[in-house]
Image (cartoon, rainbow, N blue to C red; front, side):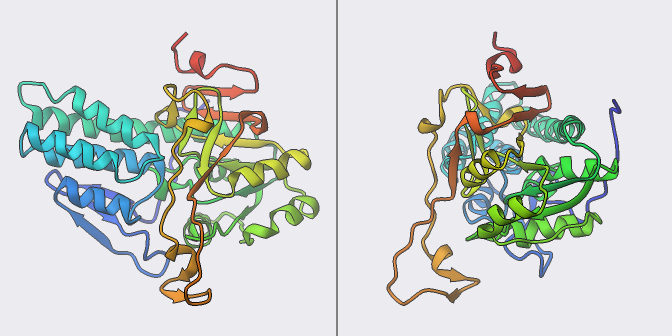
Amino acid sequence: MPKKFHLKDPVAPILWKGNRLLVLDQRLLPRRIQYVNCRTAEDVARAIRDMALRGAPLIGVSAAYGMALAARRGPAALVKAGRLLRHARPTAVNLMHAVDEMLQVSGAKNPAQAVRRAAEAFHRQDLAANQQLAIRGASLLKKGSRIMTHCNAGYLATSGIGTAVGVIRYAHQQGKVAHVYPCETRPYLQGSRLTLWELMQSGVPATLITDNMAAHVMKTGGIDAVIVGADRIAANGDVCNKIGTYGLAILARYHKIPFYVVAPTTTVDLATPDGSRIPIEERSSREVLEIFGHPIAPKGAQAHHFAFDVTPHKLVSAIVTERGIKRARQSLMTLMGKK
């Protein structure tokens, strides 16, 4: 199994400059490439909350750098930044892990230097994990596979080549992927704006489908696997991911299609026993009632906007992590080295 490989990404989702974090504004993609200049933890928290950046692994890495920016202002600022960043978005557990790791080294003789180094190490770990995820995930696919994916779990959601999309890109490089069907992912359209753009930039054959086409395409399109990322994985293997993932898992089970989840171990939350305990973010209804500021519903209409749902572990064929692949009935505790 190769230890390293090279897949070129057209842009970097974040750039660490030592005294500031440049964040690619994903709200503007694919129309425009522009960076947000974050000089404080407050700036990073705002970028996370307002979805200038998104994706559980990338949120974690960015939060680590946000803590590094705060550490330069002293211990009180670091504690305040930790509270602020934790509340930026409640579902992605990578964020919580990043804040905790930075606080663990804050008692060092030179806390600013220690937190900066810890943030840089957290970033490197995500880069390395991405490569292992791609290698392990690709091993599950047969030659000429037709893949369906949901939301965006590519390099725009991580600091590396991606989780689910990283697997797809690496497998395509090996001749294992014939075609990919990304779902549009209403209401924020991460599938159409981001995943399709990534696949096209990488030369992977892809056709966008609306979310409500998934069942029909599974029935008629010869789909060989559904591959998604995750924002939090509970101790029992329940998977929290972008809203619509649960429905895809049910459809995949009915059509006898394997359903794979790809995520680094920073996405695993052993402190949460099952998916019913995972907090589900509910975002502004405006993101459902409008598209790019243009109303698509009657004036005064109400709407729900649950950003995530939980897929029961029984519907998941395998969870791919950088430490190994968890299949049905295997313990996440064992995979994480806790047993």
